[in-house]
Image (cartoon, rainbow, N blue to C red; front, side, top):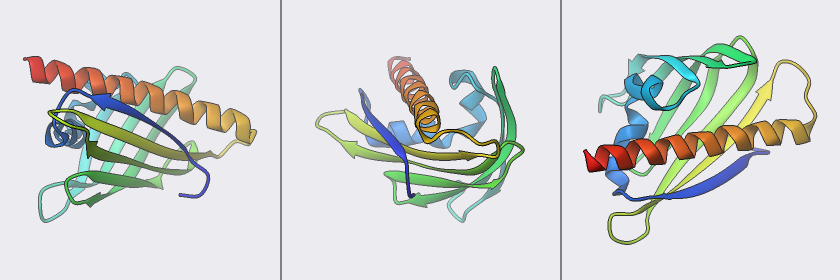
Length: 148
């Protein structure tokens, strides 16, 4: 990823539990807010998603896009854009690191390029909002599943 935005959060759960929520695309509409539909189009030999179609509705931004996922062991996943109505590029990743006990630091990196021209500053701010919402939603989802 060239120019990107990143942020981290600590979640009160083991890395495997966090990755379990990240990899459960069918449940994204339950906790992400913007994702209204998620459909796995292809899986790898281990049953992990390789291509996922996501339908987004974030108010002013509505999109239907397909992402290709690459899994790096049990603690990292990255994705790139295959096709989209509004985006030219979407590269991102989650990297998980244990931080003692059953706690995990999750770092989310994201680079977005939209088909309409935007100032770099506005694009970075949008990336930051997307990342912060995603991390907060992930933390809430993982920790609520842990308590259940």
